[in-house]
Image 1 (tube, one colour):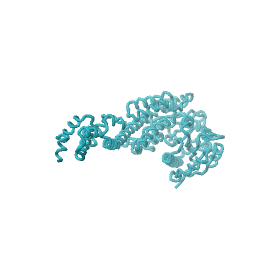
Image 2 (cartoon, helix red, strand yellow; image 1 turned 30 degrees about the horizontal axis):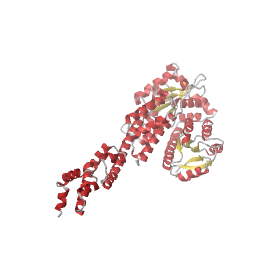
Image 3 (tube, rainbow, N blue to C red; image 1 turned 90 degrees about the horizontal axis):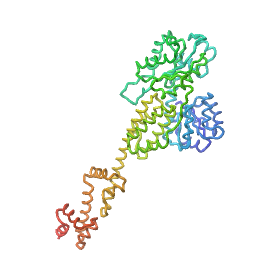
Image 4 (cartoon, rainbow, N blue to C red; image 1 turned 45 degrees about the vertical axis):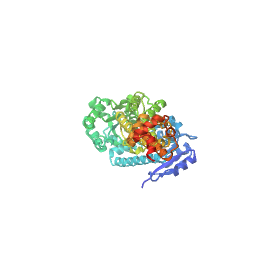
Length: 526
C-alpha cells in the first residue's frame, strides 16, 4: 500500500512523540518521514522531503507555523497539505492561515478518533488527486497547461504550443475556471452529473459559442475545469470577456440548471505567463459567495476588494448553542439566516465560512456526545462534515445546515426523552422510599428538574396509573400492613406514619380503595 509522506512540526518533543504513538499512521495512509522543532528547520525539511502533508503547531520559535505555511505556499517550495494544531486561544490566529489553503485545524488536546478521521479523509483526497493527475497526463493539452502552471515548461515547448494555438503577438490569454455546484450525494434520489460529462459539456458549449475550429485546451483541477482561452475567441463578443462568460454560463445552464460558477483570471500577454492568470482565477473564486446571483467573477473587477477572515460573534454563537439545546428551531434559524446574510454582506472568504460552520457543527456534536448520543446516526452529518470538498452554493449550504440543525434537534429531543425514561425509574424508587413524607408531583418534579405536567403524563404513560393513585396505593398498602401487625397503634398514628396529616382524610381514602374503614379491616382479621 502506498503511504503518503508526512512531517511533524512542534517545539514540544512530548507533543510530537505523543502524536506518533496516538495515531495508527499506516492505517490512515501516511508515514512520518521527518520531524522538526521549529519553523526554520521544518522549511529545510520540506524542501528536501517534499511531503504531501505537514502537521504543524501555530506557536513556535524562530519561524512560527503561520510564517512557515506562508513561505511554503508563496515561495512554491512544495505543495503539501497543512493541518494546524492549536490551542483554543489560537482560534483567531489560526483563521489567518485559512487564506493559505490550510486543509484543517485541530484543537489541543488532540482527539484520536477525530484526527484519524481527518487523516483518512485527506488520504482519500490525495488518492483522488493522484488519479486525476494521472488522467491529466494522458491529455496533451492538460499536460501543457499543467506544466505552465507549475512553471516547468521549457521555452521550446512554450514556443511549440504558441504555434499550435495559432497565437499572434497581439493575442492575450485568459485562464478560466468552470465549477459545477450542488452536484453531490446529499439527495440520493436526484441524478448526479458525472465529472466527465461536465467536462464534455464545457468543451462542447465553449467550442460552439466561440466557433472555435479546434478543441479548446482544458485541464482538470481538483473540483473544477480549467480552460485556456485565447483572446481571438472573443471576437464574436467584441473582445468582452464578461459577455462571453455570460453566454457560456447560460449555455451550460440549459444542460445543468443554475449550478455553474465561472471565474476568469486576468489577461496575460504570453503563454509563459498563464500561471499568473490561473492564480488570479483562483483568487476570483474566493468571491464566489458574494457573487452568487450572477455566478460570474472576473478578477479584473474584484482585485481591489478585500475579503474577510472573521469568526462569529461569541455571544451570538453562545445564544445559538443555547437555543439549539432548548430546541428553539425557529430562533436558531433566525440566527443562521443572519449569519448567511453576513457571509455575503461582510465579504466572508470561503475558508472563513468553512471555519465558522465547522465551529457550529463541533458545538452541536459535543452536546449530543454529552447526552451520550451517537452522532454517527445523523444522516446529515457526513454531508456537512465534507461540504467544503464539494462545490456548494451558499443557498445549498444553508439548506444542508438547516437539515443538520433540524435532525440534531430531533436527536437531542429523543435523547432527552431517553434520559427522562431513565429518570422515571429513579422517580418511582424515590416515591416508594419517601411516600410517608409530605411529597407531591410538583415537589418531585422540582427535585428532578422536570416539568410537573410532563412528569405526570410520563408517569401515567409508563406505569399506567396516575401519580396520585400510585402514591395513595403505596400508603394504603403500608396502612394495611400496620393494621395487620399491630392492634395497639391508633388510627391517627397510622395515618401520620404513612404521610397523612389528617386522620379523617386517611380513613376516607382508605375506604375509597378497600371499600371498608381501617377499623373494619382490622376487625376482619379477628
